[in-house]
Image (cartoon, rainbow, N blue to C red; front, top):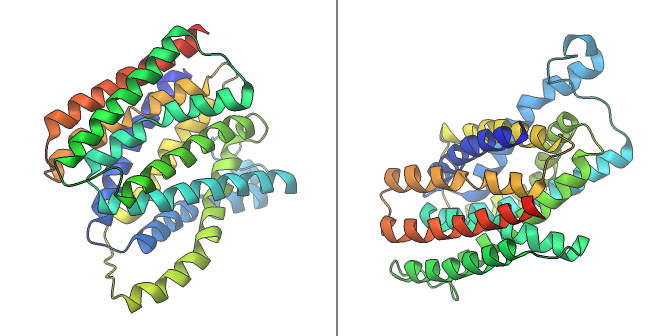
Length: 301
């Protein structure tokens, strides 16, 4: 069941990526990020209030937000800080790079999650996992050559470093999710995470507004901005639900979630009429084969 939930999460995550690109094209980054997070917080706020004032109304609905301890609030706040940092980097990268460049780089997330698990839990790799790492890195290098055809030099383009750093932070968040979901109610985590991300972003957005106006960077409201928050809520709800299963494997769920890149790559590439889709698509398949091997190795270990 948790694997099906992971795949469903990937579907909504792929659409979420397309809405992000649509919202960020020729638009100011921080307001887009902020208002999309406000949409998420606005959705959950009534459920947080109702869960305190009239808990009987939501009991058994899957939207009841139980009260959590101060320590648990701190743990959710830490998660929010990691994710918001990842988002800021990823949003800036997505504005300045084609979605068909960003999506495959994001697809390497399970590789970094595995490496993080090795460093933290001192696990040993089996043959499948080693093969997956080698294949993923090899196709990632080939993918960088496809970027050169569009004038994107991986070694010199700062936005490439932004998306790589955002992906690494996303992998850290994945490892941390496995830790807190087993200790804190999943709905409470998602609800308070949605609130805390707005709290964290607000001072940076206010500071950025002065810079944006000084540099005359235009912000345009688009209907896709709140949909970013809405589709992320659905994707994360399914994701946290999958993690809540005792036998769930974070490495497998993380890999399944990477299936979202296929939606973002194919549909996004066509919508935004991006270049070299066949070559980049072939390299993306190679990356996903490597991730599949890593996942298979994890299942067999």
